[in-house]
Length: 163
Image (cartoon, rainbow, N blue to C red; front, side):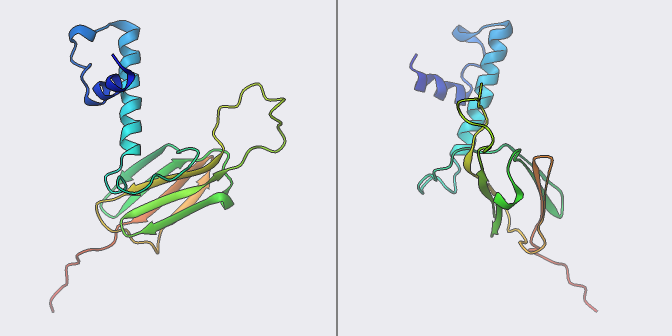
């Protein structure tokens, strides 16, 4: 099976129901983990509101978690090794963007490094929400390598008391 066909089949979940490709034990766990990672990759790369435009050239994409309650969204983005002055957060309607860059450590030369696995360079994460966001009271903090954003929802409707 060609790799592209295998990726497509994994994305559609074709291997999750058993059949001729059914395997057990560790192989099955690895296959499920691979499918999960590929699903995440496809979901992050193919955003419906961005699919028609050119893809930006960024070196890496940090991991993130998004939580919601009735008044705001809370977004946590993993940015270990990124300086606070290298982070830019913007709100435009219902789109929240976190961009910036991780700079290479200047005290370590490539010749002395045994292994370099963390990405350096520019990054971008964009989050599209179903409703407009209130840009003014956004709260942001960068602590322990995690950027925490609290973004209030814009009040769309408000009940007015009649007197």
